[in-house]
Amino acid sequence: MNITLSKDEKLIREDLFTTNLVLFWLKTNFSLTTKRIMGYAPNTILGIIPLGKAEITYPLKNIAGVSSSTKFHFKRFIFGVILILIGIAMVQDPSILSVVILLFGAILLLNSYTSTFTITNNAGEAPVIELSILEKNKVKNFVAQINHQIADL
Image (cartoon, rainbow, N blue to C red; front, side, top):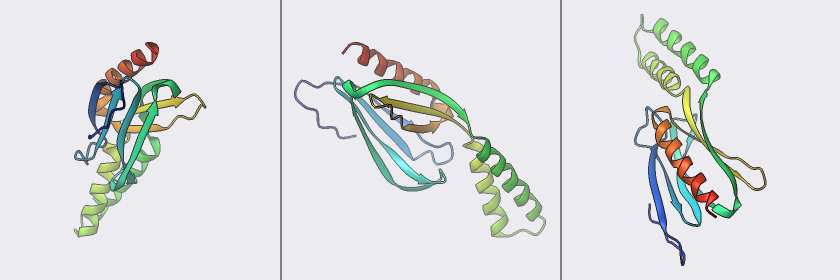
C-alpha cells in the first residue's frame, strides 16, 4: 500500500490479510503508524462478489479501543447447508445450475466462521471488518500492537 506519511510520522507495521477463504486473492491491507491506522478492505456482495474497496483511516487519538474476535454466522451456515442439499438433489439430473448451487453453498459454508477486527472510536462507533478465520493469530498480533501504540500516546 502506498502511504504518504506526515511530518514526524513513522510506519510501525503493515499487514496484508486474506478476507475470504475462497476468494483468497481479495486482500485487506492495514498499516499502523505512530499517529494513525489506515487501510483498504474490499467491498463485496454476499461476501463473494467483489465490488471496489473501502478506505479506512483512524487517528490513534480518536480510537477508544481495538479488538479481535471470532464469529460463527449461523444464517450463512444454514443457507449453505440448504444450498448444498438442493445441489446434491439436482446432481441426479446434472446441469450447470446444480454445480453453481453446490459451489455457492460450499462458499457460504467455508465462510460461516470468520475472524473479526473491530475499531471503536471515541464516539462509540465500531465498524467490524471480517477476515478469514485462518488469519486469526495474525489479527490478534496486529490488534495487540495497535493497543500498545494507543497506550503509549
